[in-house]
Length: 472
Ligand SMILES: Nc1ncnc2c1ncn2[C@@H]1O[C@H](COP(=O)(O)OP(=O)(O)OP(=O)(O)O)[C@@H](O)[C@H]1O
Ligand SMILES: [Mg+2]
Image (cartoon, rainbow, N blue to C red):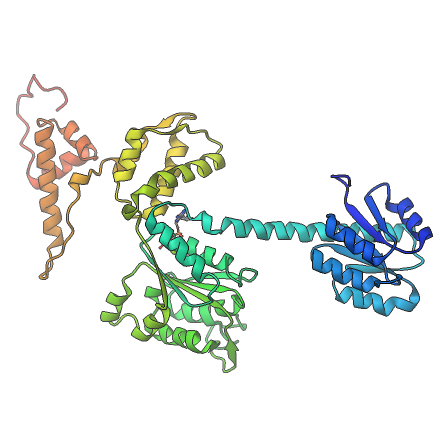
């Protein structure tokens, strides 16, 4: 079979018609012929056929049966059935089975050719669609979670198990740890993958709007409800709804959500028709829900319902061995996207990046890589000075213990003390040279001077400028 020509299989017992088809389409397409259904099906199994053209009345296996078998072998294959007047009803039946079209005999060459082209177009569209679907699935495969740490391995194992369980899943993790990515992976590997994945940011939508956003509303339910509107639960029908920032959901909606989880039904705002919710539910939060329960901001019963299968995504600083892998991963994709060539990361720079605390987790790391790629010269190795100062300058030993005693703290006073102490130390280290001290503190010299003025640390200028000091 020619690689670049579409492959058409003709199943036809009448020799003269086989010849006719060869004459019409044999030039443009790669044609295979079979004189009965059994042979046709055998060819379908062995070859990649783009279009099947079959007669309906065949000796032995009928044309209908051939179409049926073809659809089983490859649902994306297009097929055309040829029929005489007597068998039009059967042709319609074939279309119900998935045949693309039928053509009545005797046919005109032009009409036949048009039919064949359309059917092939249809089959290639279907194939494209399948490819798209497959890439989507691949993009959100379990392997798209980068990381070798045992912490991330545990997460990967957990989502592999829960993906097909159709239970409510709760994702817990700091900002930027990959909650949304994991939600998408779960959806794309569940039996709901052919249906929508609908995210809702419960923290980003004001309470009064959130209700109709989630459950929809009937026309006239409130001022401004001009038409009936489907909520996200309805739009996610048969698919998955991702309730992001669930900890921020107002209490009155938590009651409604609890009912959806328990009864799998709800009503639109202002409506009384009960709607079935056939959806998978994944919720996520970066909040401590138990703490929120204590503060009466989150319902205990909802928490228990959600917490059936909790998956905790550890912060990046607790799985530092993943940092080099993630850096390489983002460096590859971002430099490819920006058409840049970055040679790699120097050991010193790597050390800085591994030691950093990454409170914004993977998102922060990804954004930093993007910034470096944009600012960097082609084919250079990333050096410590390429790393943004706020990351580079934070030394581990400067890390403070952020404990809050029972009687609380006085934040402004603490910050002030800390600032004064650091300025004093920096000035000492710099031998009083303000530009040097400012550099140690990662601030401008003028900012340092401003601060010193405010704190009364700046000595009044000498009436005679000292001849020994240049600019300082
Ligand atoms: N393990 C990982 N491997 C590769 N990419 C990751 C991984 N974890 C997260 N990412 C990427 O990091 C970015 C942030 O992830 P995501 O948006 O899923 O985080 P999040 O937990 O939902 O954050 P937030 O709480 O701020 O909404 C995304 O671009 C995501 O693709
Ligand atoms: Mg998110």
